[in-house]
Image (tube, rainbow, N blue to C red):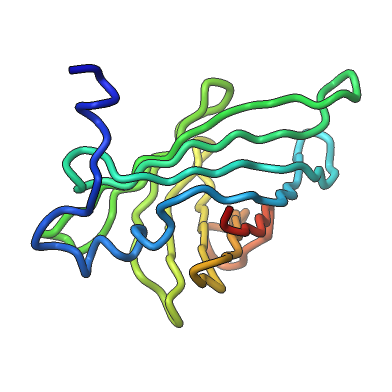
Length: 168
């Protein structure tokens, strides 16, 4: 057996399907328009993302792979990748969420259901500032993802990334 054959699952964790649906409804491939605030340059940058979600680890986990395409330093397109692993904890009735990239730091959050079918993910970024990442306006064919950071320990929130996704 290969690593991929051992890693990939074809369905959610049997007996826990309702809980797994929080992220399970995202399974598939999405085309995304991405805009983010580059703090080092104090400007908004726009690009595209191909975002693919799938079941892994016997269906206990939803993992994604993202391929970001945006302007590179020479003005041409630059591709970077990242991945998020979301593992369900039945005791805590929440999700452990870890995002990582070969070119970035690791972000660790806790995920839970929010209002109106939203997904709320909260944690702290590597520099210690609180972050809140939301999946909102989720339908079978689209969703909006919003990334916020707080510069005052959660008193106020500043939008630093927005992605609009359409299912392929």
